[in-house]
Length: 259
Image 1 (cartoon, rainbow, N blue to C red):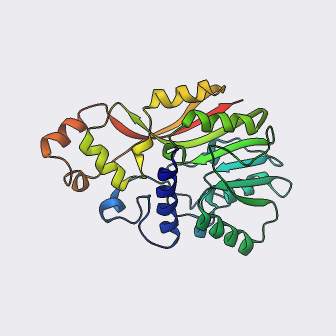
Image 2 (image 1 turned 90 degrees about the vertical axis):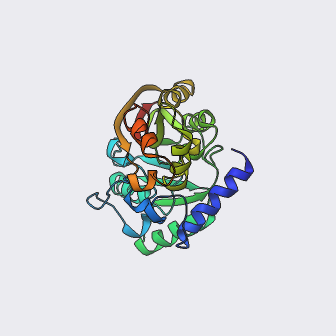
């Protein structure tokens, strides 16, 4: 990922922490109508202060985390999935969150201190070059972060490197089904989690295969629906109708795979 893109993403997510409009759908005009993040309120270990609504799935639900596991969350934000994973690993496990945005790390550590957790760590770092020892992680997680990374293959190679033999991951992300109309892509980039880096679904899965993973499964898939009042800001009625009648779509998927 170029340094310019990284700095743009860092600023967007720093703005989220400071209550300005960032990358997610929760703070921008018509974006409140977009179905994007999932509801965590019934998930054990959920901490509301750590949830900015920036995810697109609940990867812990499919991660097969066991008590005592060491878990890594890539792009951990304010700690939402880290704290859920911490509930699953118990007191004898360990959860590490890596994020490249300093305000997010600061917020995550504030949440950690309030909760008094001793087996959770938040590390400032780049997920394309993880500051994590090789073969040290049982389970890797990520929630709507890899779509922002330009080199998915490099990132998945890093995930492969840090996982223990027979380790696995559960990652929720945004992909495309087919090719989006240019005007729709512009609308999506404005309001739906910055999908400009999202790959076509088959290409996304291919990057995981090339990184060396096996038993790759899409365990959940959900279509992201943009409301008509938002689409009408960018597309004509005929263009909207043509898109809805096509198979092209923005998808949230959760992928499970093993080393």
